[in-house]
Image (cartoon, rainbow, N blue to C red; front, side):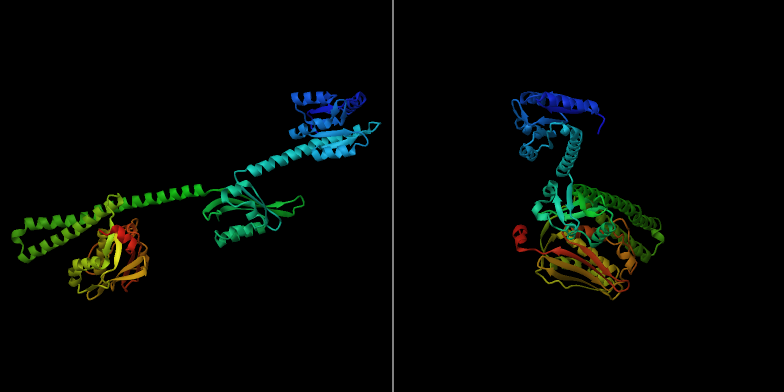
Length: 503
């Protein structure tokens, strides 16, 4: 028993019994701080003015019975031991049913008092255990975490209110379910094996799991599943403690996305500076060099040399202008200053425009350039952006196709809402380890054409940006020495969209 004093309310109207109890306390040096009440009225006064660790009360008092204040004591949570006379066993049993801690029956030799210290100690310990259980129960019920408990077979036999609050499932919908099977639907097999192995070896598992609310919405939780053992070391079930980390995970994903966007933005700036520092500077050096030659040596140059230098200056000027145009397009796109205007347009007309524009380039290398797209196939797209995509891809195809090759523009209807456009060539193809470098701003990839045509790789970056802005995706299929197919998708013009976008 604890060393501190036990505050005890002793309700007894018999003076002899009072003296006998006081003598017992004194003889055994019991750690009791006793308050005496000799009637129902004085008992009420004592209960009103003070709190006690335990109450001992005679059943029959001069002004009533202990049943008058018994409910109040029981409601306060204070243990009460009822003392009755012989023949009052039914009364004692009734008191126990109402919530009394224990009872003793008087005997004339005061033998019942000898048992009182043990009964008091047991009653207080019982109260302490009950308080602890109540506190644990409240902690479980009011926990901000979701709690599942199972039997030895892993079947759920308890969930706390937080589970219903988070998932929307009522207890009746989850009780009796296999705890591990609740993880099957939305988690990979590898994770399930990991959980099973950890629990099978008698350990606990901690990790992140995905589940669905009753509404069907997915959410993520930080989960710990631990076995529960009894005093003999036998496993009696499992307890799962879960924290809803959906918002935290969303925040992490947002940070990750922002980090990637920042990385791409920095890569874009690096790419821009690289192009300005090298690819834009180089043609200007050539322009200035050939201009100086024409200016200083004009009288000593032959007509053929002058014409050759003028043609070189013209080619350099055109290439530099094209590069500047792409840089300006890319800059406007990256800063959100390029207007996006999707309208109904005929894919045949767009491809014919590009073919007419690049036909001279193709003829210069004796390349067959044609479109297999019939008139009347309407797409929903920004005309300027998609024309730029077709022009870039077709120009690249001509650049990397040798003499007497072919370049074609084709279309395949994926379904009633999507068209797949491909620019195919019989050119030199792309090495396998270079395929992953295309369409990526952080890796500058550029190769010379079959006639030594130069490039920066910027055109493909613009193609990807333009296609994705129009709701499509772009990819490439190629093999070194066997040509290339650049494929991108675009949404078809539906009737509903036509009603909105047609003039």
